[in-house]
Length: 134
Image (tube, rainbow, N blue to C red):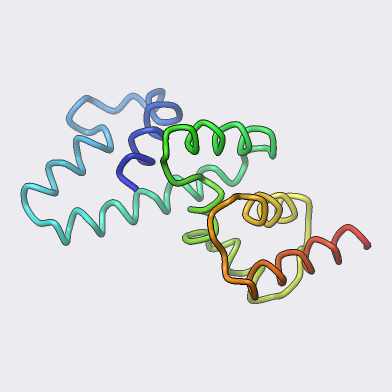
């Protein structure tokens, strides 16, 4: 996950104008020196922030980013969305896709090659099928 944060930050957070010591990886490494538990919690929050920040990405951008991450053996954005996204959790709890943004989120998670439980895969396929039929 640290590799994902580094990759994502390099592409999407450089423009934020953080000073070198405030860059996400530098901050994480400083936390690691103090407490691995604090660093782990900080990394989880940073990943969650990246996932939430990426929700406006269009389908093509997510596919491109996932491909780049996969080629470097880094966990994909789609997989992290599945793990961390509040939006994804709401869709799964609701059992229905409400709009195109949710449709692409579910679609990207389904087609990401990361292992999923058969029940989750079946539910994702049903959600997509129901949305496409509507």
